[in-house]
Image (cartoon, one colour):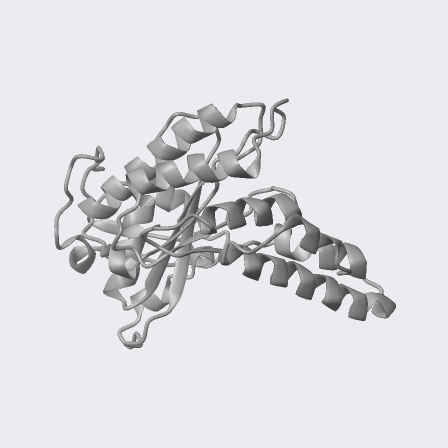
Length: 267
């Protein structure tokens, strides 16, 4: 086994890294996650655990059609370490197998940091991510970015409003994300249901953006339905209605057409 190779964001890896790589695959708790961490950065080894669903890459009969797959990496606001090359290596491997990758760099809103600090860390995170993406020759035209918005930390006394969130988030994205990319989707990241919708709508209402914006929420989409359902069969219809309402609100937000008064409609 060769010595571990580490990269800075300015170094360019071997162009044939994927063709020469050894794919290591194993089920949960088989040690592949540990092995991945130990060998991270070695261009002669491509190690990913079962939960990342890259089993198909070890097969020779990979379908020629495209299929989205994602890799998520979180950064806590108090950590200044930039994302490693994991997401770029993952994206390149997916594209080599005719899979459309979704990379997911996220800056967590846990903490009492200001929105100014969140903007700073988010920009640094995305700059490092796309430097790695370019170094691994990933085509931005066949790449989906799922990322967090620039918001105040949950514990901060000053919670920025939708217009400020939109302004700061779009400024970061314009500085870091290639115009060639087909779209950007946002995770809610612990925001309230209505806040995630309001922030998205404020951004989508901005004219002249180089890419379409949409949502890929879980909690902010599902919470109203789950809170209404509560595991009771008699609440199913009301829960479905609540889910439909939340989905409709976010659909309007993607078009920049959401308004606070629409929330007063019965879910």
